[in-house]
Amino acid sequence: MPIYEYKCNRCGKITTLLVKGFKEPDNLECNSCGFKDLKRIISTFNSVSSHKERLASFDPRARHSDSFYKDTRNIGLEAERMLMKAGVEPTDDFKTKLDKVRTDPSSVIKDYES
Image 1 (tube, rainbow, N blue to C red):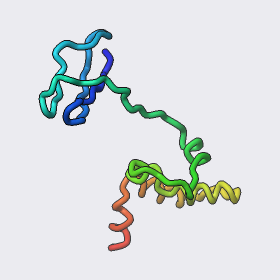
Image 2 (image 1 turned 60 degrees about the vertical axis):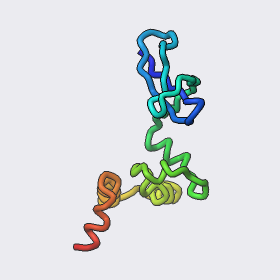
Image 3 (image 1 turned 120 degrees about the horizontal axis):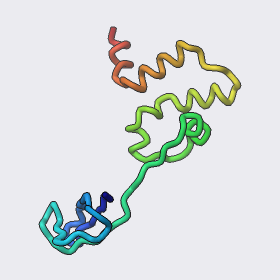
């Protein structure tokens, strides 16, 4: 069953619907304002890349969206990139600390306060 998204032509809010079959559902209505004039839009999507691919494509000078900074997998990318560029293999201690801060970013503050 496909998931379709519709944008309300009155309030601009997006309504997401799980649709049985592939034909347009009857009686479309905005979840926000109840308006019945909605336009089907192309949904956003995610792609998956390996850590190695993400590291190779990382550019520290590039502008990043807010979602980049909210993704904890991006913590330490610049440090990893610099090690890779220098041909230095990260130590196990470095990897352990990086994994810890990626899974619990507030641990940096907790460790500092201790």
